[in-house]
Length: 309
Image 1 (spheres, rainbow, N blue to C red):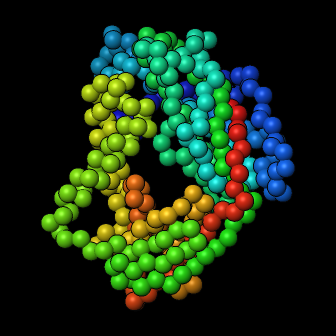
Image 2 (tube, rainbow, N blue to C red):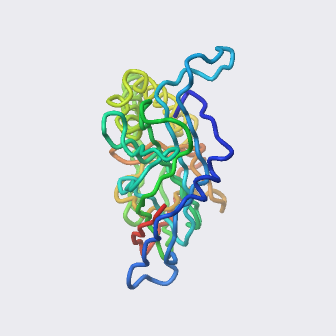
Image 3 (tube, one colour):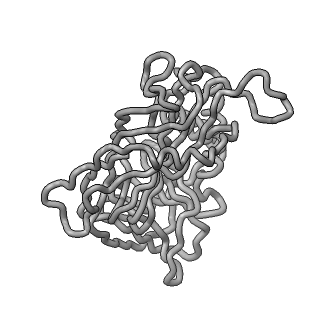
């Protein structure tokens, strides 16, 4: 999250789309039917530019005070059975802005990192991910970012569904394939403050890592931004709580596509989620009765495809 609203340049996207592209990755030998076709690529669809501002600008322009400069490029991948994006696999082969090499920051370190919260369409037909960069004030002149590299995309050949009836009593559990769902035990109100503090700390750490160790790169300002983002996220993804019904999911969730409750024959999707080291907590609307039916869909035949951009 960036509290300073970035400027989206109308010409930026066209410039990147027309830039020379690296050769597409080859289709692995023995790919199963329904796997992505050879040459599946990631293409830029959105660019944010937070360029350094001249110090002599009139203050009433309300453009903020940005001395560091930064970029964010959102990529779209289309294919079949896309089930995930491996952020750790991001590889930047080259990065330029206005023809200048901006692969490194002012201290000579990698200036580009995988952005938070990739998105995958429920039907596996598309996914988006973000690459964020802060080359540093001394290396950002003018122009648009042109990036070449690759990332690993997880693809699948099908899906399977598993369901289970679960008591709403706290501590109740059910096994659905490789995952276990649990109704969280009631917690004392006195412990709520500590839990909230732990949640905020975990989010702050996650945001700092996603920002490329912002505390090291950007000083106190970036650290404050991470804490603010953590507080916002804790409110957004805070589970069902007293007004809803929570489910904790543990085990191997790497193939999990969707998790819903089945109420009166209709799927009820979670309205929030919170991901910590112990697993993921999904927050649903309140349920009636003593039992609830949980339905999970899993990707099958997963494999890795290296995608160029």
